[in-house]
Image (tube, rainbow, N blue to C red; front, side, top):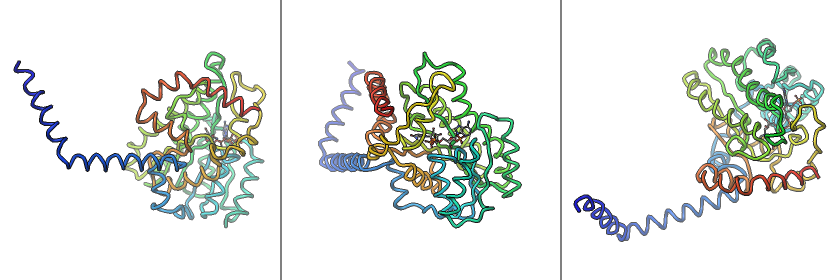
Length: 346
Ligand SMILES: NC(=O)c1ccc[n+]([C@@H]2O[C@H](COP(=O)([O-])OP(=O)(O)OC[C@H]3O[C@@H](n4cnc5c(N)ncnc54)[C@H](OP(=O)(O)O)[C@@H]3O)[C@@H](O)[C@H]2O)c1
């Protein structure tokens, strides 16, 4: 009988305390807080903390004269980031595989920003050719003698089920999206450690927070990116080097057109820009994604989510109610993804 005494006294005590009117006020304030927070999530296109920093934090004008290296600068989010940074007066290193497209982006940066030609350097670089990364870094350092910020943005998406994707395809995606970023970061790191300042910004994805059917390797690469750079953050903090992981939901770029399928080299699937334009209430524009990324960079945020509801709700759900989210993904995810992709390819 004695072993029940303490729990019984505890429960009676709790009931007495809970009937105190003070608890009713606390409960009302808590419920109001939850309602306001939920409304904010529904009205936002990024996580609530990011929205607060956008309103009250440092503005993106801190980039003037900073040297920023953007990988995957030849299209999509990378192009939008390059133009936005050029407008802020940052000096730019633009890299990817297609030189002609990089030169086009350079011209845009010069036209829309207030930079001189020497302020924008084009460095042709393949994320998969790790042994060339060091010489690319030397080329950039010779030109600008410093690199303040690296934006690891280059990447490819995936449209294939696990059983159909070849191992070669899996390796290609992991090399491009993860190992390539690690390799370039390692080449730049000694320089940032020596100058005792730096910022590494990684364009990850909501697929790095939430697993999605038909993109297992892509998800693995982005979960890997988040995990690697979360660990790395603590190691480089004493050197005044900061790390920001950016997790966008769907953004209107060429990512679907450029997506890798089950076998490497297969015809690209159809462009979905027409669909994306009609669906900008759901899908973000590249410009908005770049704008919010620069808010996070200016305020040195560790991780941000850029997405509109319902995608934003799903990330919140995955973060705070993982069991519920996994149950839903298991039951509905595959069918939903197939339906969404059917529309994309129409
Ligand atoms: N769009 C979305 O919905 C979305 C959502 C979440 C995250 N993201 C991430 O955002 C990043 C940018 O994608 P995006 O949407 O802007 O797509 P995108 O328009 O297809 O741009 C991809 C960029 O990556 C470069 N790239 C691809 N493979 C490369 C390689 N082997 N070496 C060097 N550069 C390479 C491409 O340039 P070259 O072809 O000239 O090499 C291009 O500049 C990616 O990491 C992607 O995972 C996109």
